[in-house]
Length: 260
Image (tube, rainbow, N blue to C red):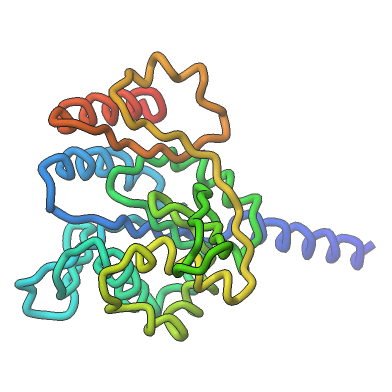
């Protein structure tokens, strides 16, 4: 009888800790290069701290006049360096992982969205709870044809709007991926392609995530019935001179729908 009770207690605690899990680290590729980015930051700040037990969120930016290698303030990790598309986005993400390297064991996953992304964090949490904790790489899937200029060499990759990978892969990237930083400007050196090649070389499969892209002005309230219950990632990037006004309205409506 005592043995039976003891076994039940063991299974209870094992089940509890496996369900409880760890936090997830959200590193938002950010900058101040365009006025519309102000809207994106305001959108993130509305909800990024609402689920602190599951997600720890930071903007990651290069700062050319920073006197120290890093400065963490107001949930913004500033890194000494110059903003650029290539190699800037990958480089600052790599350096952010280095900054958090002593804490990576506290996290199950690293989520690397860009500034224009909108995440439904409770749905993302449910999605991650169903995934493996090791060797996991995910994102919106696309194919880059003739990778590295080699005909017929297609690369399946997670688009940089939201790249997700487990913390063990973050550790591997820190120790084995420094050669990918500081590369010359080239289409082949985009940050999402570098992540993809690194994981592919180590035989890490890519898992697709449910996503929804908004590239022209449309009221989210109108399209809400067509958005799947499993979608947790939106990419908001309209085109034209009215980006600031339109994207402000889109982000505000997305927040009303999914967080209020």
